[in-house]
Structures are given as C-alpha cells and as structure tokens.
Amino acid sequence: MNRTVPDWVIQTCWSISGIFATGSLWYFLSTKDYSYAAGSGILAFIFAVAAIAFHRRKDKLAEQSLPTEFKNELPDDYTRRSLDEPTDIRLFESLPELKALTHRTAQPGWDTGITVEMRKATYDVVDFYEIIWLKLAEFYSVKHFGKDGAAAYIKNYIRERYKFHWAKHEPSGPGTGGTIVGVLTGRDVMHDLDQLIVETATAVVGYRDNFDFKAWQARWEGAAPSNGD
Image (cartoon, rainbow, N blue to C red):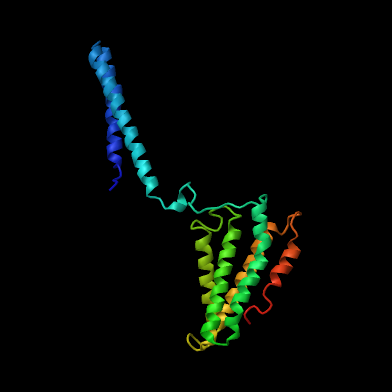
C-alpha cells in the first residue's frame, strides 16, 4: 500500500538543511574550521535532496490517486475523429443506411401489438442511437461533454428522458397509465435521440461546404417511415 509523505517530514528536512547551510556552515567558516564547514555543507545538501525526493514522491502519489478523468492521459479506448479523414466522412454517409436497417429489424416487433415485444424492439433502436451518438461524439474532445466522458453523458441523458416521458404519460400519478405507458415512453425517447443525433450532426458537418448535409438529412429522416408508431 502506498502511503503519502507527511508535510512535517518534508518541512523538517528543509529546516535541517537550512540550519546546516546557514548557521553551522558560516559558523565553522568564521572559525576557520574548514573540515566541519565542509561537513555542514554536505549535510545541508543531503537533507535538501531528501526534501526534494519526498516532495516528488508525495506529488506522484497524489497524482495516482486522481480519477482518470482528471489526468492528462486519454482513456485507452478514446478515438478522435476528423472530417479531414475519408474514413470518418464515410462513417457519416453510412448512418442513414444503418438507421434504416435497425428500424427494419425492429419493425416486426412493433407490428406484433404485444407490449413486451414492442418495448424490446424500441430498446434495440435506443441502443443503436446511443452507439451512433457516441460515434459522433468522437469528433469532439474527450471531455467535451463533461469530465466523465461522452458515454456517461449519453447514458444519463437517456435515463432522464425515460423518467420525464414516463411521468408525462401518467398525469394521474405513478402506475396509473397501464402497460401502454412503456411503449409510449420508449417511442418518445427514441424520437428524442433521433433529434439529438440530427442536431449533433448539424453542428459537426452541417455548415461545411464539402458536405451535402441537406441530402444526408433527407436520407436520415426517410430511413424510418413508421418510427415505431
């Protein structure tokens, strides 16, 4: 177990170093006792080095105790995307097709009319939107959406949207809306995330001359004709 260095140890080393470097050293020089003067100088140097070493150890231990988000190092899984990279542009271009595929996969679940199946289908789409938004967040710096990172931000956002929409659909109080509330809430959260992705994409590429954002948005909006309704 790493133990921090108490401040009094560092201060004591500096104090002893000061005593040998000033009082003792100059006293022995004044008495022309050069051997003791040299010894005082050496001891002053040793205690000064010890104080510096203890100080560095304390700083290192303090840095190790910091959460990852407060350190300068980036997380191992951090990826910074750039609109100057063809691969990242292709990622953007492919999003409407990925959305269409996800909605086609979820559509049979919505078509059953069974509450549990409909909610499961919506959860799959919500998961897809979360992943896509995290990909868009890679165009920003690692702590752009808070010290805990983009993943923590979007999870909290989704959780809060679920809480809001569920409460919204039960104006008479918790538990009064029946099982359909889960379906309605999931649909609304899905729509919120869809809009969040459009807004984020607009900020990232919407104003670039070399990207046809209107065409992209038309493809995105046309990728889910039923939207789980």
